[in-house]
Image (cartoon, rainbow, N blue to C red; front, top):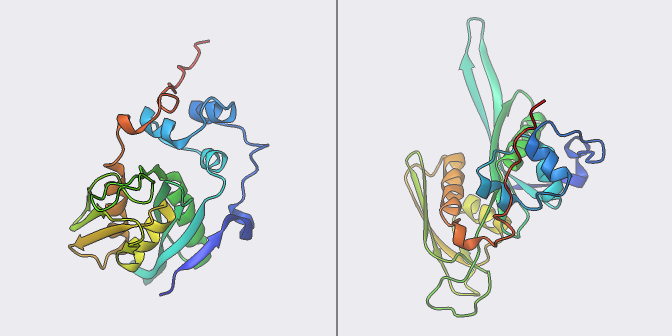
Length: 230
């Protein structure tokens, strides 16, 4: 199945009115008041994104790709119930990426829900130049080897010299492109037919690259305020 690209501007149901947004969480209030200005601050503070408006506010230029659409069934007393399962990857091609999956009896609703879940699961990606064959110093690859696992699938990402491109299977390559990676070697093993597990393994490999030394003092300065007692 060919990948299907979706742009937020092309889908009216995917738009969010940030001006009328009334945050329900402390994190949402901090984002709207400009106390939090990046996803890195949220990730470092260990906070969970519970409002989709937070992602729209901090990452307004996210692109999405439908990676897989499959039919799933479950048996009930009356008949078999059929739904469509959709896997979507989102990213801004500048160091942020997320994976989401959803089921629904209609493909369009499943795509919308999977896209929303992917944006709620977005994480920062540390880019760098970790290949011993390249000394350019730009952020075209990863700073070091990264390994991620999900179920039986294990994905290894190795920095590559500038100009090599992305050596990976089609789903992994699309996710790496949306993350902003331009040159890399990848190796997968396990039940890679499960595209969702494979993409989750890539995301966990990205998560392993994040550490305090990769964040600036401004990015780690955010501390959620305690709720005021009445």
